[in-house]
Length: 185
Image: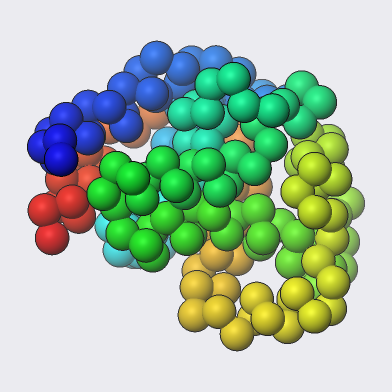
């Protein structure tokens, strides 16, 4: 098993390699989007696992080179690929599932929250079709029973908000320290 330092270098290295690339169909780069999502989680006082899940939620777009593309809007099943990548790196199941659930949260909110679909960006609407579409009532009822449902919905809100232009990227050292603490726990 590689050391925690190697894991952190590898995972954060993805952002150093690919983070400047466009965040598909949005006015910010990947790294700006991830950084803003993490900053929103920190501002609301969430724990390190949630903060890192917010930062890593789209890592599937970065770690899955050569995977199937959603019509130019990123990687098919990026939420599952990202979650599996983080599990394999040694992060907790809770963190991995929060990454995996950010797409479920979108599918849920398009069913349950009036006007949500209309507020989605064009890119988010286009990818919804590849992600299973709007949840069924039965799927939504099951999702509500999941202990991670509420924080997943909060993460989805950060995902929507984390598209502001000209917000400085946070100090990634803060996130690397959080990752080191979690991996050592």
